[in-house]
Length: 437
Ligand SMILES: Nc1nc2c(ncn2[C@@H]2O[C@H](COP(=O)(O)OP(=O)(O)O)[C@@H](O)[C@H]2O)c(=O)[nH]1
Ligand SMILES: [Mg+2]
Image (cartoon, rainbow, N blue to C red; front, side):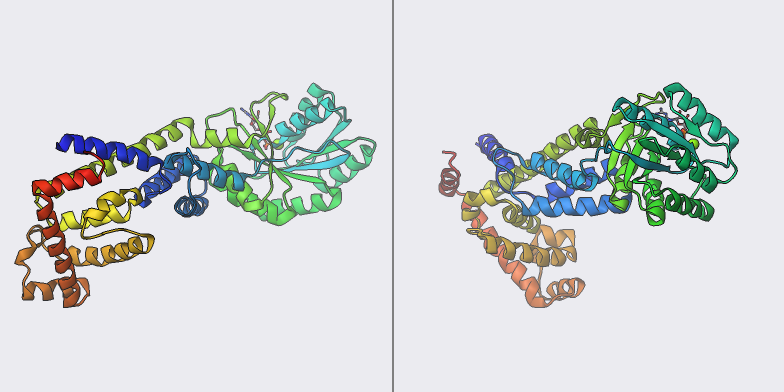
């Protein structure tokens, strides 16, 4: 009999999994997995906390779409929240304009200058390059080599960045697109920022693009903020997405500046520049594997809940009933809307309407505190709790003696009910009410 009872509960639980009700524990667990996935993808911790808080809130407040399980519901919200921060990206306008590239050393600025030049050439634009990284002689040579490969003119070689830019702009005034490659530093330094500001003032670029290596990670947000504060970033290009990095730093950079991702670099060749696809980016960031684990974990959490329903049901029928059982039962009932049928039979809950659920949850909190200051013996056999123990428990929980008495009254009532359930007639009634007989 118990087995079939368990089976019926299981199938009921499957229904619950699809019911318009979200279990708080499940969401907490899923949210924790999401946090783990995002942090391992290099997303800024503060941002992760913000996002997960929002996911938790929305998951609890919003009802899943019809036909959508709770798990899918939470995942959908996760996707929406991340997409909201990330945006859908923006395509660079094909028009006459000056573009200034900024970023720290080695992020891929010079390479991306060449890629962008080629991209605009393919759109039929006349493109020229200016090498404003005057601090390293090799930088000019590097850009020259890249420019040769794509047949674009380049101006550079001077000692002062402002002068080079000024002269370059004049020289290329007939060109459609002028791309300015600037110097980077190993870290954000004052003179780098000053130089950026001067160059932006001289060239008045329509686009000020921050180039960020996908593996930069949490630092990306800090970098982006500094450049944005100095010159105002209009877009982000994420490079080295052909590597193993998940690019979570980009999420932080975008969140910090509000500037959209323009495209992504996927290799060292001049053709390795791709359109940004937010959904693809997000599934990479979370990892399909991670998403899979997330779903599996959520299912396991569901199974755990199912087991506890089964256990409680078995105890109900066996007549053995401790304070902990009562607590578990209340917890179950206040968190399980569709279990109203079972609730009808329990003295603790009766019919749990929304306001009752709220009341029960409040009571649960109170009871939990009281039970925390009880000994194992007292929890298992509350009949030993006499006046002196009542006083001690109340004191330990920072409560009044009458609170302990209320808990005991509640327990005794529940226990009586459980006892009566253990006779055959009541069992039959229970099963009938649960639609199992
Ligand atoms: N795999 C890969 N390497 C890249 C990409 N973009 C740039 N690189 C490499 O990164 C290194 C630094 O690039 P560079 O353009 O000199 O960076 P800069 O210091 O910011 O100008 C070079 O070896 C590039 O070939 C990319 O999208 N994928
Ligand atoms: Mg460079």
